[in-house]
Amino acid sequence: MYGASRDDFPRRIVCLTAETTEIAFLVGAGERVVGVPGTAKRPEAAREKARVGGFTTFKLDRILALEPDLVLAFSDLQREIVRDLIGAGVTVLCTNQRSFEEVLGAILLIGGALGAERPARELIGDLRDEVRQIREYSAVWPDRPRVYFEEWMDPLIAGIHWVSDIIEIAGGRDVFAELRDQHSAAGRKIEPDAVVERDPQIILASWCGKPVDSAAIAGRPGWERIAAVKTGQIHEIDGADILAPGPSLMHGVRRIHEIIQAFQANG
Image (tube, rainbow, N blue to C red; front, side, top):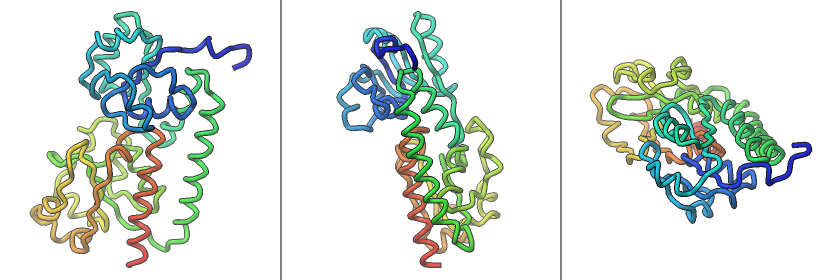
């Protein structure tokens, strides 16, 4: 920013999610990060920072002890700790991105707040370039396979907006695309029979930190009629690659694109 020096921006940053941690490091502000959640795995240097709790299980005193001048948070799911931090006089930037485009917007917003707008724009440019290449590659496929993404198993929860976007980017068709605009998981609850009716050719699952049981999915009553179950097209996607709305979503895009590419080759 014109006329601003690096010292004009936050010097002690606490991140409450894996994606805000990753964004801070990727835009060059990693040395200013003093606290991260236990879920922060990328980049490797983030693991050396002080841990301040889990996604919704933070300790206010632990965060305040780090004397942050900015806390980066995500979504209404963290509203309680955000409220407490604001009440304690801490500045909080809480993004609420849901779509893939909103993820890119959040990168720019956080980068700007950290005095790193240029590297944030460069990062976004790199992500857009890769997305464009993947779209061009899959554009020649005559058909896009039907894909069901399962975020939770009891009750069944279909994929959030950015997951639906990623399926489309990777070359598939989300069988529950109409639910993508539902912000809450409750709005994406589906019945098992609805999955059978939509007959996905590929099933993807990431159960919010719980290991996916592919055999249990295949063994659900009536699901033996689903094309993906018949052909063994049930795949676990690492939550770090698909459920954290930040730059790591590109890992999920690549993985799902590989799955669909292999499906097309065997079709």
